[in-house]
Image (cartoon, rainbow, N blue to C red):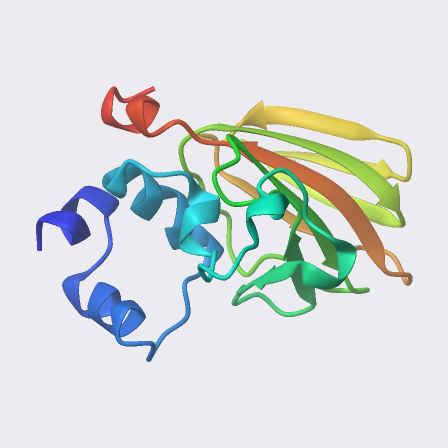
Length: 168
């Protein structure tokens, strides 16, 4: 109950995640990691990483981060224990987040291909390949692909558990 309260997740939802009846969603990863005082990537690790993979993630070993939004795939690029959480975010045409969300930390992104409409703190930005962005994760944010081609974004998050506790 204490962990659920610290993470801002219902006891039932946390129980379902623990029992494997519900997958760990992006929206829950950061607050749960902060409540446990661990890095977000540690919640996705399966414990079978070889010792020589402490600093690298091979392309064929990327883990997929579960998302509930349609047309979005998130592949984890950073190894377990990394301070930064790097992801390759792929957004299919007309795909996007189901709703705006916020969490602790900061975000940086670089559009590799296609275009993305990014909404940060109620301001819309249309970004194309070669454009980048950065913002505090505590601001409500959402994104979608307004184009007809697949969009790919190198997306990096940083979440420090102490910042969550201190209200930053």
